[in-house]
Image 1 (tube, rainbow, N blue to C red):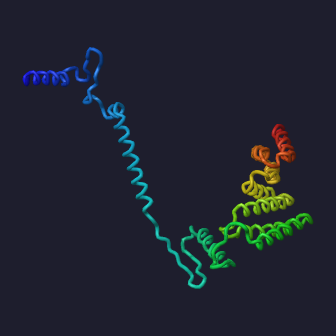
Image 2 (tube, one colour):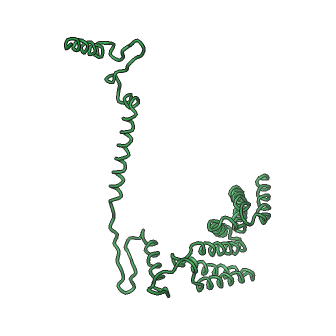
Image 3 (cartoon, rainbow, N blue to C red):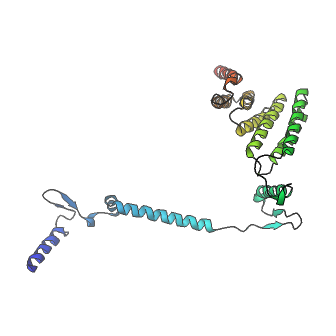
Length: 270
């Protein structure tokens, strides 16, 4: 029995050894490829578990490198005023963030609430809204009288007050206020043929409110047209129509459509 097993083992070794065709063995029904004859890429192709292992190892290495990068930090030189508690730094790249932090701190200190706790976003303290509305209406009155520079000044003041709203107040209200003010200031610039300034304000208005803002789209398109930037004007008006036709003012897009036709005619002539 032992001799028979050894004999079979020797036959098997001879059959699998390098002396027998080297790369493959032709059996009665199939061809068997030997692992020793496959390169690394071939072994990965024939072994899905090896591919999975390599993928997981690569991900682990990437995650480890990312975690090491996240753990590094830079110490920032900050100082605090003992009386006002305002933060300051010598790093000029952080000036905007420091300003926002100090502004939020001042807003919280000035709250007329128990324990100085910020109120919920709504309802909003009406005092600031009343002042913004008064300045916007004063700007509108100056615009109607032809005092365009005075109108721009009033809109500027109203915009600064709207932008200075505390961060804990409703952001949607700020967007609505700024949309109207950018639109009005764009109109004041257009009346003075200050097309680039008006185009920037009109673009800011539609960024604040894309749907239900036909005036903003029209003013942006008209300014681009006046500057001779016809392709940009065409794209602006087309985009505006796409938004407004799906919005609540879809019945009032006639003025925007008329501007689109005029732009197309100008492009055909050029």
